[in-house]
Image (cartoon, rainbow, N blue to C red; front, side):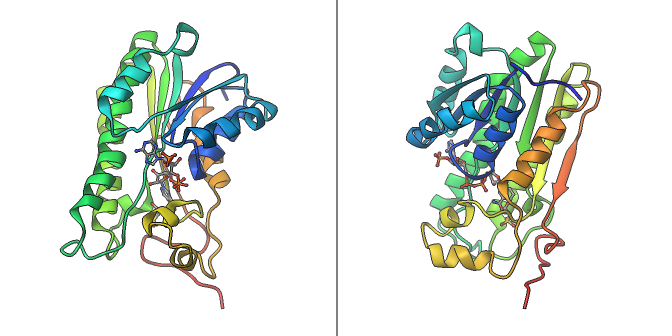
Length: 257
Ligand code: NDP
Ligand code: 8X3
């Protein structure tokens, strides 16, 4: 196990759900946290609790990962004491709608592809060259069981997560011979703001997704991310697929009586 004490960890989409839980997990390991998302006020509210949880330092900033120039500028303008990013958690992501692909709103396609695929690529492109130069680093991407098996009415979201899997594999190949590690963490259903965002604030519809199921918690996933990041330097965890006991794959669930 390697120590993350004082190491810089950049987490995208840290204002909610898995990203926020991951910030607390890395805080517990004594890391220095660089947290971004669009809702800056939510990030700022986390600063004191994260310090209390053990973070060595916390810096928050507003970032929309879809804005490639802003991503480049944010990473390039990090002060020297924050620039040596040791772990990048590419977590920012979302799903919009649950509709037949031939009836879908193309605006939703753009939002999912721009965030989950191009946003992940933009942050990776901005951060990884520094890791290669420093001879150390770890990129942890959030995939999904949705990338392993497509489900009805979810073609484009599933496609973005299949793309994440291909990008993680490709990045690992391209980094071969360097000390930079790449991991894809692929959860099944976890209760976060994910379904509220998918259904644009329809809380009732979102709650139905988790009805009579014990979903994963964001903390379950954060624990897996932290575990991957703390393996000895020669160990590269390529992927972790985790689901609740009530889920077999994208299509098969057990709903309790
Ligand atoms: P949440 O909606 O709770 O969190 C999503 C996070 O992503 C928020 O912090 C949001 O912050 C951020 N985000 C969204 N769009 C952008 C953007 N353009 N720029 C910067 N940040 C952005 O969902 P989850 O925690 O569940 O999702 C996190 C990741 O996990 C996603 O990649 C998702 O696809 C994946 N995942 C989720 C599963 C689930 O069942 N919940 C299962 C498998 C994978 P803000 O709105 O403030 O920008
Ligand atoms: C999120 C899990 O099954 O709702 O990636 O798409 S699912």
